Amino acid sequence: MTGKLTDAQQLRELARLRRVRDRIDRDYAQPLDVETLAHDAGMSGGHLSRQFRIAYGEPPYAYLMTRRIERAMALLRRGDLSVTEVCFAVGCGSLGTFTTRFTELVGVPPGVYRRQDTNTTEGMPSCVARQVTRPIRNREAPEADPQLASAPHSN
Image 1 (tube, rainbow, N blue to C red):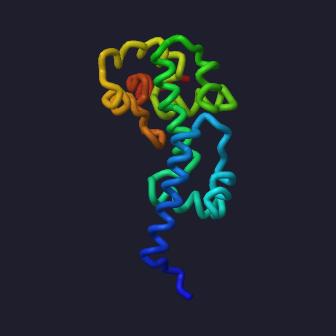
Image 2 (image 1 turned 90 degrees about the horizontal axis):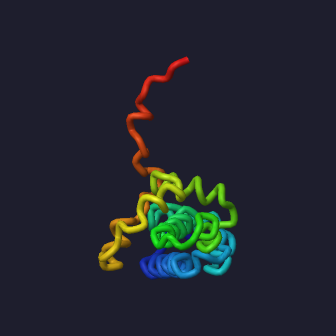
């Protein structure tokens, strides 16, 4: 038997991956891990991670964290919750990990984002606001101050 999947098998595989992605979108605030997602989808963790990356451009854990950060951005813009409250509301168990990932994706720490962007989407339709405020994936956020990064270092 060859390792090539038939069209029907590929479609079933994509449907399973879509269900995993939909579950992450729906249950982002719940404790989710790749092994549980994979087990519930009937595949191994490694297989899920590989196939999810091929289908969606990033592994399932990175996708989950992006969803959490998107929701955190919306909560921070509301301005009525602290950064710690937002961290736990979106399902992150560690404030340090949340802050690090938020900063990687958004370009500024969550406290700075909260102070800067509380009214940026006021009056905007929610579908437009989501697009405008979508975090950048895979550590592509611009540096907060490019001049600082290029400044010569003194000893």
